[in-house]
Length: 213
Image (cartoon, rainbow, N blue to C red; front, side, top):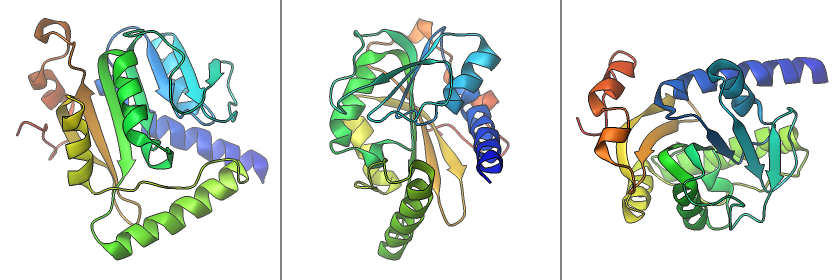
């Protein structure tokens, strides 16, 4: 059973990586809240770039460099990684605004965030149940519970407050557990150093648009 579960988790990580792959910028990546590390592993294998993992607990199942941190200050210098991913992580954080600010500090070019979102109070309750059940089984109680689910609009406001420019926003998954993808450029990024919005628009699946549309 454990073998089948791990096989499914690795396969799921690959599918999720392929969805964010078009938006990864530069030659280095940091995955904040990396859990088992499999999305980072796929990034290294597929793109051939160095990848660091960081989380508040040790769940790493890869050979990638992994750092356990205090959930407040990331143990990396400013602009140390071209792209930083924060995937289904912020709603578990005690202080998501602090984690977001730290991720933006470390990111030299791009910040990629995915988040579970809700539309109604009932939807929020369902998210809490689904998240608790899945991650409780996955991490055997070691993972922090969901603390800060937000609506799409609330996440947009959070990013704007940090001066992050959302260049692409789209559904990451639909159904019972709705997840939203936000591709963000950090304030220090200069216009001639990153993929243009037109290029990003070309990378979108049919029917999706960039945040500027």
